[in-house]
Amino acid sequence: MSSTKDQIIVLADELMRSKGYNAFSYSDISKPMGIKNAAVHYHFPTKPDLALAIVKYHSDSFDRFTERVAEKEALSKIKFFLNFYTSIQLTGRICVIGAFATDWNAMNEEIQEAMSAFTDNVIKWLTTTLNEGNSSGTIHLSDSAESEALSILTNIFAATQLSRITGSDHFAAIKQNILTRITH
Amino acid sequence: MSSTKDQIIVLADELMRSKGYNAFSYSDISKPMGIKNAAVHYHFPTKPDLALAIVKYHSDSFDRFTERVAEKEALSKIKFFLNFYTSIQLTGRICVIGAFATDWNAMNEEIQEAMSAFTDNVIKWLTTTLNEGNSSGTIHLSDSAESEALSILTNIFAATQLSRITGSDHFAAIKQNILTRITH
DNA sequence: TTGATTACCTACTTATCAGTCAGTACCTTT
DNA sequence: AAAGGTACTGACTGATAAGTAGGTAATCAA
Image 1: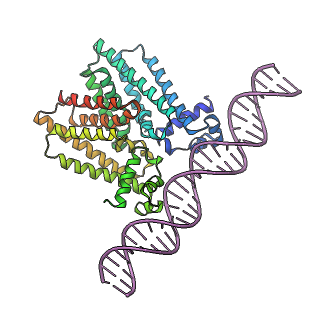
Image 2: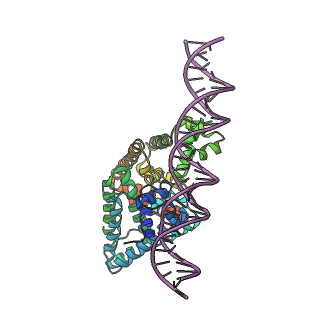
Image 3: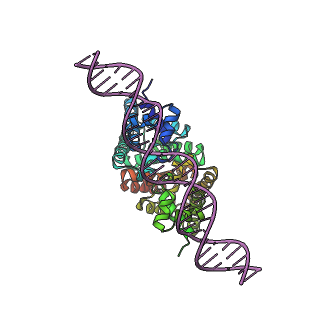
């Protein structure tokens, strides 16, 4: 049994990534949860407070993910990373990075800084992992590890967006293209 | 001197791609234009009508673009395409595809269909152009032309989003990575 | 020259939004 | 048993959103 606060974060995250930050209201959270609007404001006084909590939620989730796969082989790590996006796509959501990027200019500095830190973290992990696989020989790099990391990240998070518009086949093709590229 | 209607479209597109669909209101259009809210409603009765006009505006722009570069060599066409995104990035905007994808579930079917048709059109043009360059030898493909097209499109439109979060250096790196990949 | 059409404005409505505040029931600590 | 904190509810407010009704000045076509 998770706390009301945690449930609000999970639901808000779901709403944020399916409808967008400005398209959901506190009522979209309170109604399905069977609580009052004021209860949501009790836990998250303002909407930016809630947005910040969502960023931290993703930041923590990513940290747990990297810990969970830490002992695995580099290529396997990348595959787990890509599979995570498959589950995002299957549930009709998009990646937080794309969601926040669209509403970027409607966000305050604190949220922007938290998102920048989180995104940098993802890029760093990808870069390190690609270098790791390159050293051990399971991953092939034709550009710098960071450039390849940026390429893979934009491919996969944009694939969740594109597949909303043109269908899930395109998600599968993009994911496969990434794997083909790094395994030669 | 362009008509009020055209000016509204241009401004709405600018707002849509900098703040997001749900973050801008008719006042954000009427105020800077020095007209009344009702005047905007006269030209575009509802907000979805305005969103649809934006999609058509981009669809027409893209058609004009493909006509303009029709006689150029394939690799050159791709470079023009990528440079178009550079100007998007420089002005702090994001690509329409990413913008609409985020707010997808807040859009009606008519807009979704128009966006799907437009995006399919972009993918088709990229696929054809890549095949063209592959035949003439200026472009190197390591996967099917369509897969590479999807990869390039997601790379470049997500790059405009990512660079908002982590800075313009990443946009440049992604753009360069695409060119390196297709020219070997 | 009249009558319709275009392109607005003034003034409004209705809905919903984020956010507030006083009050309360229920623990926990002293 | 008293005091204080936690997690709410009920009942609001003020702002702003999209959208509309009715009027008007200018243009144009018959």
